Length: 146
Image (cartoon, rainbow, N blue to C red; front, side):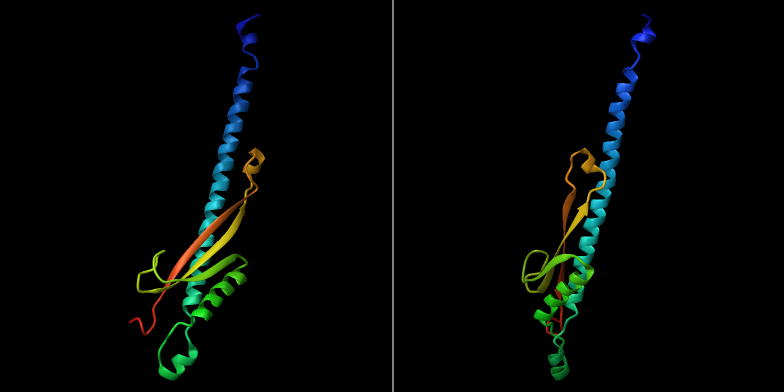
């Protein structure tokens, strides 16, 4: 038996292992990029919803006294309505201090929850879906704050 005959089949095992590793790396890259895009979208939707909520002023007080004061109930409802129209689940809460809000400010915090459907990694035993959370806080400034 010659040396070439003894080495037959060894390269194919190496190539099979290397090909598997390359496919896992491609899957990780593809699904990691998709998850990152979903994270960015969740953060952007939360920021837009917080902005929509921050634009809700008390119209009656603005008309009668000329002051622009945030209607807190309408602001939270507007933020949640924005998320509903965007087709994502989320919640809007008032934060008075901490969590990205100054000690004296009134802030509307919007939290969004989205899922990303993995494309390639489930082939290798990873979960089919990943939950991604996004959040944003809008500091609400009105005539009484200025």
